[in-house]
Length: 217
Image (cartoon, rainbow, N blue to C red; front, side, top):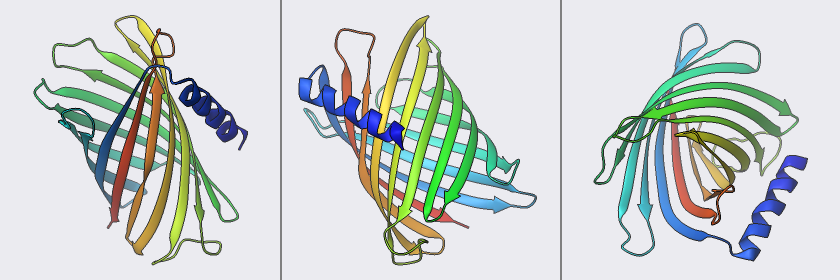
């Protein structure tokens, strides 16, 4: 858990210094998961972003489809495609590759996700990213999360990007309170904080108010 302590200290230091711009927005999402035979699964996700400052304009819609397969007792490989529909701009395409490892430590569910993606289109330079995320999920009642019970989810992610030969790093810190509606559905709400442009003079800080609905079939 030391990585959580380290990233929290970094985020607090930048908030106290007040460097760069701070943006606030709303980011709701719908997630549909379907298990398939032979350890295959498919995930559909639709996510929107709405600015809550200045003109309060709608920013974009992301629609993604991922196919995954278990390759071990606790590991999964996933491949997918994302279509980004910006407001008033050209479409962007993204190819996604992920490797996920999930471990259970008593009541704690700990997951590691290693990912790469490539974004192109829209008459803009292609963006290549390598990302790592660690996430922890803990039930607030007992040793497992059952229907009509709450759970806590925390995660940190490091996103390395290369665009037109320029390197950048973004660090994300997420905190969510979740509620299990029924055995196949859960709702999460919380904050998604992102700070980037470390290698430039002014850092960019963004805080998203996130609401996520998950439905499994």
